[in-house]
Picture 1 (cartoon, helix red, strand yellow):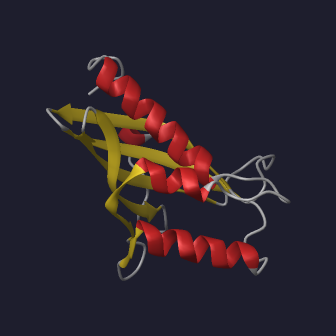
Picture 2 (tube, helix red, strand yellow; picture 1 turned 90 degrees about the horizontal axis):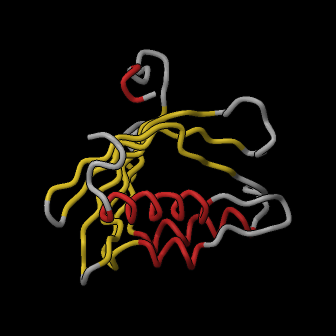
Length: 149
């Protein structure tokens, strides 16, 4: 469904998605805001990298992995931003196909990777939270359809 059709719920989901991308994006010499990232998820939140065999992590496992990569200097800066989105809401559940571009340098003219985050949200106690994110990068033989760009 298009933007604006759901009013306040879609506005909250838009803000939550923006905070999600902001929490994992950081410049060299800084750190990702992993405390904020965790606060956006339900306690049982899951992240699934489905580029090969599914790599399934809890939000805590994901945060630990990013902290380790950052502390070892393997991840010095990272930026991921939304290029396009499609959000659907029914009652207290929502799904967003969020097309992203990822860069190690926010000033880079082109992302090193683009793909789609399939983000599931649930409403808990009057506010929306992320329940899970599943992602796939674009690859040879797996191009993002025009409707998601």
